[in-house]
Image (cartoon, rainbow, N blue to C red):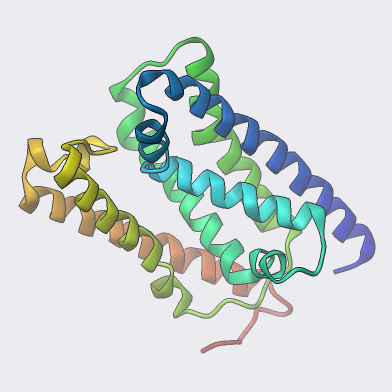
Amino acid sequence: MSPRREAISNLFAIVVAAVAWPALMLQYWLMVWSGPLGEVTLRFFSFFTILSNVMVGLVAAAAATGGNLAPLRWLRGPRIRGLAALCIGVTCFIYATILASQWHPLGPQLIADRALHYVVPVLYLVWWVSLLPHGALAWRDALRWLAFPLAFIVWTFARGAIVGEYPYPFLDVGRLGYPAVLVNSCMVAGLFVVFGTMLVAADRALGPRGSTMGE
C-alpha cells in the first residue's frame, strides 16, 4: 500500500471509529437507566449488534492509532478485519430485512439505532473494500469465522435459560421453542457462510492479480 493510500485509509478509519464509539456509548446510556448497572451491562453486551459494532470500533481504532503492540497488530490482521466486515454486514442485513419493521425508535434511540445498524456497517464495508489491502484470506476462513456467531448462540441460550430473556425474536426460546430457534440459528449460520464466502471471494479478486493464497 502506498503511503498516500495508507494515510487515506487511516483517516477513514478515524471516521469509522468516530461514528461507532459514540453510537455505542449513546446506546449504553439509553439502556443504563433500565435496571441495575451490572445487569444492564451484561444485557448490553448480549446483543450481536453491540458485539459487531465493538469489533468494528476496535479494528478501526487499531488502524487509526497505529502502534506495534501485539493486540493492535492482531486487530489489524486481515482475518480479524474480514470477520468484522462479515459480522457488521450480517448485522445490517438481518436488521434491515427482519427486525427493522418490528419496532419504531424515536429521538436519541433512533439516532443510535440508525448509526449502529446502517451508518457504521456502510462506512466499515466501504473502508474494507476500497482502502484496505487484500489477497490474504483463504476459503476456509469463511468456516473459521463461524466460531464467533456460534459462541454468541451458545451464550444466548445459556443466559436465556437463566434470565428468560433473548436478544432477538427469532432466538426467543420461551416463545418459539428450541426446535424452531435451532432452525433459525442454522439459517443464520448459513447466511454467515454465504456472506463469508462472498467476502473471501471479494478479497481474492481485489488482491494482487486475484490472490491464490490459502487454497
